[in-house]
Image 1 (cartoon, rainbow, N blue to C red):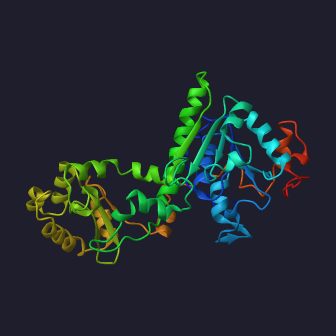
Image 2 (image 1 turned 180 degrees about the vertical axis):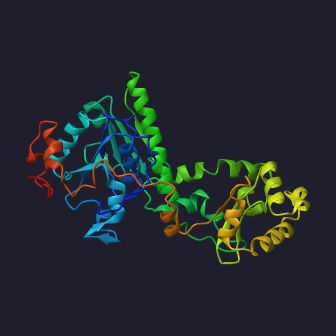
Length: 371
């Protein structure tokens, strides 16, 4: 991966092989599907990216190292790549043969695309009744939004997540992490794992419909329940309503995250700050006054001074680290992948040979790795 490894979801001593032997065909492009199949690969699945002759567009997204996109490398480690031209009959026939010998097909096309290619769910399931087809799209397979174009920012906007991400009194601004894309990918991986469990118990495969916007909206269950019970314009409880759960600026320009929600943590904080008088004000109606007092307290010292002082006090307080500081802290060491991200078509011949096909099955186009 050109020297770029991501922190794995697995611990250093926890090499997951729970999906060993599971064969996954990933037809998706860009982030959501790529992250979903990365999660499956980290659990031991044999993931093959089936790419069009021009490859996944993510391969060309900056920043580049040695001509390779670090973004593509980051989510493609541990996978194989085979080139199939699904616009050609030979390519479509090859996909059906591969699907007949696989456990999961992951796709992210707009609804109806596979059907127009003659590769819809009825066709795939006829080729392999145990197959799981997971369609990972922006707005799902049905409904008035199905088929609409969109990206993460659009999904979180419609889901209600973006409106919650704003400075007090300010306008919503884009999130720095693609929460709908990544959260939807995790939901897809979770549903795939559940479907694999069903198949292992003798049930038939199924078509999973995972919508990224719907997944982001699902995350708001608690917020929506709170809003339904007490409609108001107040911030949700964990979005700045309470001073005990907020971010505070320090003297050196750094920040601290404070999450002393439970009474015991709040009591510990008041004791550590030498302010036992604040203990009874945790959920007092005048949160603005309490917030001002805490702001003044934390502004008296630097971030790292506070982090060191409060580290052993059991108060749920941590420094806000910049990305470079996260890397330096190395709390979650990056694990080398089972194999580096593949070159376009690197494993075409190998993948086709496994199901008894030759290079002509690609639809007339082989990748760079096709001898």
